[in-house]
Length: 164
Length: 433
Image 1 (cartoon, rainbow over the protein chains, first blue to last red):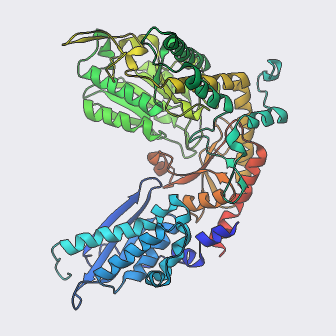
Image 2 (spheres, rainbow over the protein chains, first blue to last red):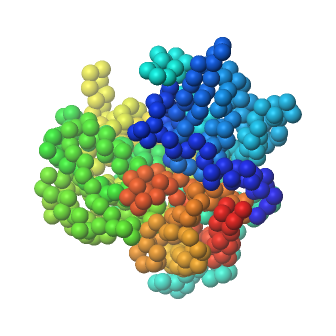
Image 3 (cartoon, chains in turn green, yellow):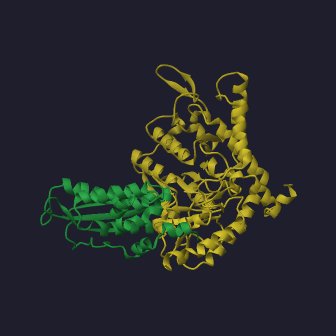
C-alpha cells in the first residue's frame, strides 16, 4: 500500500463510512421532511436518498437536521455522513457557502485550499485526496448534490403542516 | 508458431507468451507512481498489438479513400482492403463473407437488428420480411444474464410493437437455468442470449437453447462479444441466426464491430439506416435497396478500423484460437484458485473453471467494489468496478455491484498472483484500521 492510499482514505473518512452519521431515520414513523432528493451515480449504482428538515431561524430558515439512506463506496457514504454533521444548525446561505467550498476542494487536484476556506469544511477537508482521482470525485459529491437539490426544493416548496 | 505446436489443447509456452507480450506496447508502461501495469480489464476493452495499430496507420498513410464509390486507384485499393477485412473476420467466426455486416460495435448491431424488426413490423421490406413482423401476442425471450446491450434494445422493440418480453432465469451459481426453457413457446419469435456472460464468465448452453428455439420456430440471436476474443467460435456450427461482436474486445480498434446474419435472413431483412451507398435505384419518390451486407452499411464507413480489425483477426488466427483458449483456461483456473485463497471474497458465477472463461466478478465482504478497485489500482492492477452494464444479473445474484478481473491473451500467472496478493490486503486496509 502506498502513502497515496492513506492520503485518500484518511482515518476520518474510514470512521465516517462506518458510523454513517444521520443514516436511517427515514422510516414510516419519521416526521415529514421539508424536502427529499434521490441521487444515483449510474456508473457504479451508488445511491443516496437525503432528507432535509428545516426550521424557522431569526432571519432565514435553518437546517434542523439531515437524514439519509444510501448504499455506496466508503467515499460516498463518508461524504454524506460528514455533510450531515456539518450542516446541522446552519442557515441556507451558510450551507451554500460550504457546498461551494467543497466543490472547490474537489476541483483542486488534490491540493488543500487556503486556511480560511479549509476551516469552513471541518472534517470534509479530509476528502482532499479524492480530487487526485477524477473517477472518485462523483462519489464524494453524491450527497452534496442531493443536499443542494433538496434545499432548492425546500426553499421554493410551500411549507408542510408542522414544518416549515 | 508451427502447426504442430497448435495441436488440440496446446497452450502457449513461456517463450511464446513473452513474444505475445512484446507485441503489446502499452503493457510496458507503468501507472500510479511507477507500478508496472497489470491489465485485467480485457472484458471491457482489449489492448491492441502493434500490428493492429500499424495496419490502421498504414491504411491512412498509403491507401485511404472512400469505399464502394469512385474508380480511381486508391478507391479500388481501399475497397479491396475493406472487403478483405470482412472475409478475414468471417473466416475467424465461421461465417461466409457476405453474412458479415460492419457496425460500430455489438450494441449498434443489436440496435440495427431490432430497428429492422420495427421497420418490418411497420410493413417495410419485401414479402419475405413477414418473418420479422411483430405485434401483440408475440414474445421475445432473453435471459437474466444479459448485458444491457442485449436487453434494452429488445425492451424497446417490445414497447414499439406490442410484443412481450420474457426471459430465462439463472441458477444461484450464475448459469442460465435450463429448467426455465419452457418460457420458450410457440408465441416466441426471437430468443436472444449471450454466448458468454460478461459478469459470471459462464459459457451458455447454446445447443440446448437453440434446440428449444428451433422447436418453436423462433429466431436465435447470439451476443458473442465475450466469446469471439477468447474461444474458437463457429457461428455456422452453433446454428444461430444472428450474432454480434465488437472489434475492440478482440484486439481490434474501437468503432468497428459486426452483425452476423444467415444469408437468407439478411436477404429478407429490411434496412435500418438509410442513405448513401446502401441503395440500387433512387428516384424522387422511392428507392430500391442494395443486397446485404451493403444494405445495412449506410454512409461512409469506418474503413481504417476494418483494416485494423483484419490485422487483429489475423493475429488471433496465427496464435490459434485453440491455443488462446487453452492459455486462458489455465489462467482462469489459476485466477479462481487464487481468489479462493483470499478470505471474505465471493465470486459471482461459477467457481470451477469448467464451461467458463477468464472473466471473474467478485465482491469483498464489507468493502465496496469501488474501494476494492482503488486499492488494486494502487498496486498497478486495472479491474472494472460497478455493475458492468448488467444490473438485473447483479440483482439476481444479490450484489448491487462488483469488481471484475478479466484476462487477455497476454496475461501471465505471475500477474494474477500479484492481483491476488493485492486483493488479500484489501479487507485489512479498510476494516483493520
